[in-house]
Image (cartoon, rainbow, N blue to C red; front, side, top):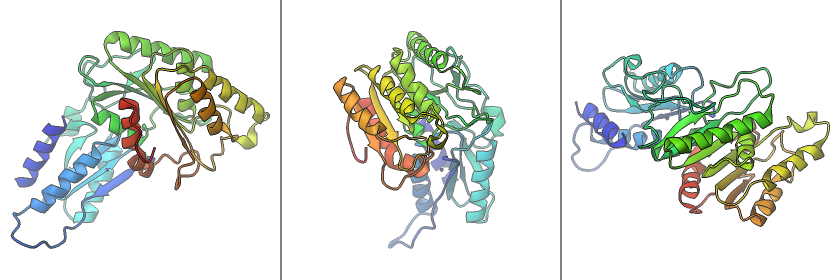
Length: 345
């Protein structure tokens, strides 16, 4: 897929959250010596394309007539339309030219109406228990994919989060060949049932032929991912971002309950899967001390884990934005895939 996209983009040139992330090629500085027309733009576009592929849906990659590229990623909504509109608008503002759409999510659409080529559900992609394929996202299938990454979103009372985007760093795994599914819960009323359903879906995915299954989530999605592992999910790794289950600290009737249930959750996780547990400073949902619990309990149980506690420059429950993804995405993938510990993880 990557080689095909790169070839297509270069050929066209010769003829980018948290809410959203935008990128545009900069104006190229004068260089010594002769330079073929479009050479600098092609180089910039190739660099941005490589960056673009490490970000998650919904996303769009566009190119101006003079070869400058722009992209937008991490957009919520039922389809990629808003990401496309944002990428085209940004490109027009920067280049003063009407730009051409080349990639929508992970589909090549150059020269075509994207809706003709990008199905709402990837061909052949089936529900796996309560999991559903990421909409408008191409899948390799269990026999060809490197693995399956399951994204579980956070939750806010009174708001349907089933159309929220996965965090941008998931693109590091899809770039490695992982299929991307979602564990959506419009309302969260039965934690035990949700965690059991997620564990069951992992077993089904493995039976279908997925070699590796990674569970990942933010807030309530992080908690249910860990809870599924506690219930015996045969996952190969879990990435927990700002896990939460009890609401904000100021509204908790009993903060000790939140801490003790976190400890019991961790105690139930056995060695085997690799874990990444992230918590941010000034998180309104954090009662404190949880990362110390994670270090001691997981180490005692022999769990291979990276504990990322209050990383500098990121504060608040929703701090895992595009900047966070750029900084930590590569080391997430290195640790979960190979057990390799590298900075800044």
